[in-house]
Amino acid sequence: MAPSGQGSPTSQVLLAAALLLALGVERALALPEICTQCPGSVHNLSKVDLYCKHTPDLMLDARCCLNQKGTILGLDLQNCSLKDLGPNFPQAHTAIIIDLHANPLKDDLASAFRGFTQLQTLVLPQDASCPGGINAWNTVTSYIDNQVCQGQKNLCNSTGESGLCPENGLCAPDGPGFLQCVCAEGFHGYKCMREGSFSLLMFFGILGSTTVSISVLLWGTQRRKAKTS
Image 1 (cartoon, rainbow, N blue to C red):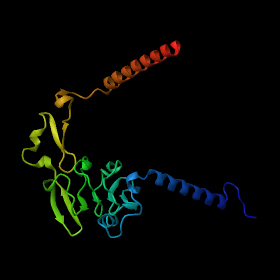
Image 2 (image 1 turned 90 degrees about the horizontal axis):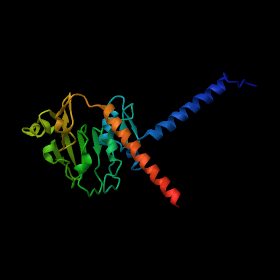
Image 3 (image 1 turned 90 degrees about the vertical axis):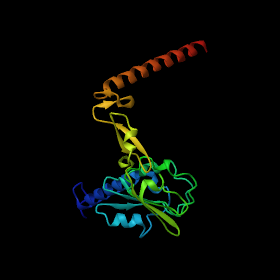
Image 4 (image 1 turned 135 degrees about the horizontal axis):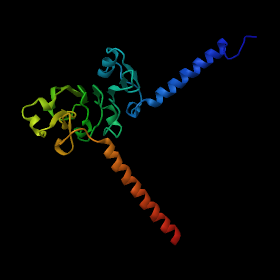
């Protein structure tokens, strides 16, 4: 009879299989919900499929193209009967390419793409508008059944846009058609007028004391109610 102790080949094989199973379960649980929002996988020969297969160290999983860290770089939700993009769509804010064509999208898509600063290729239904309008993209190409928004522009480079931020603020892109003002290094607060680093110790001290005060107040109120009942 073959040995079956802890160091036997049989036990080692079983241990390796258990580890692979555990890693597989962990990987499945870690997959962002947006990747499985629509059944199936990335369509063969779609723009997302070609991008993922031709870029080193990327992998396809469900409807997503991800890097080795699990970051979404491509999302293929074409032909998913979507009327809106849903609450999980912001999970794909790191995507470089997204395909949404062949969906009956009804809502204005502009606000849904706030924060999608890495997006460079967006495939939409033919009757949908590129978020941010044509001025937010280098090219907008219409086809029979879809249109492609290509090359997101950095509107901070446009004439006059940088003047929207306060003196100590810097203009930064925030998705197609969106801008945001961030404080320059060494400044914080309202309109970036406070100089020096933001005091986390003071912030959490105030937050902690406020939380304790509210908790004591609620505890005292509940005790009085308990005594009178």
